[in-house]
Image 1 (spheres, rainbow, N blue to C red):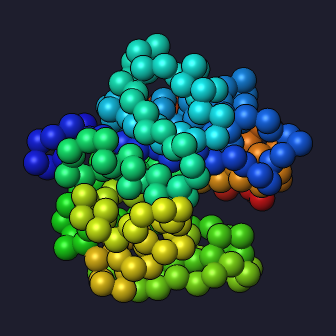
Image 2 (cartoon, helix red, strand yellow; image 1 turned 120 degrees about the horizontal axis):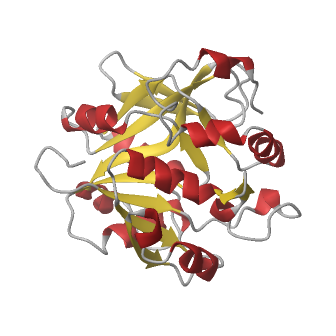
Length: 259
């Protein structure tokens, strides 16, 4: 898949997290936690392959050799993988800035390495290119947004604000998938920086952050409860790269309650 300007899409996966909340269950980088016999990160890579998004940068830090030795250059998965390596923790914002500096692409798809969202990437990319913004986030509809905080959006898709965690009712959350222009770099100072906590709110204040809502399967494996649920239902992750994935009838999935 390519952007409208014809250049091949490059996807950055932020996979440097330690997974501190999963200690005792996982002793590898969080993105390498096994589900159904596969590292979680493998599901994301196979999902990208399904969408013909085969040019991938893995942003790695903690125990990065575990990731590099498993995925290599990506040839075994029919993708092309390069690496952006952190010697010191940079946070999600700092890691993104470093990864973007490894290439001259003007636009990127960005994904968190510890969550999966069964979206139509073509729709997200096309939507982004039609906005005046420099970043677009894929928004998930959840029944309980207390763990995540929520996102407020206007009728024309502009993100108008964020609410912190603690509200136990349905709403929209940031899924951790974005399309961003290179201009985002100017909003990321050097050092250990949070993309979600600092960078995105700065872009939002300048009215340059947009969102697209998808009603699709989503899970973040960052808590023991969510990780256990994913291990009990690995078929949901398999669906994101199979013919039963995006654009299928997901009504049965609503019968399962994720933590």
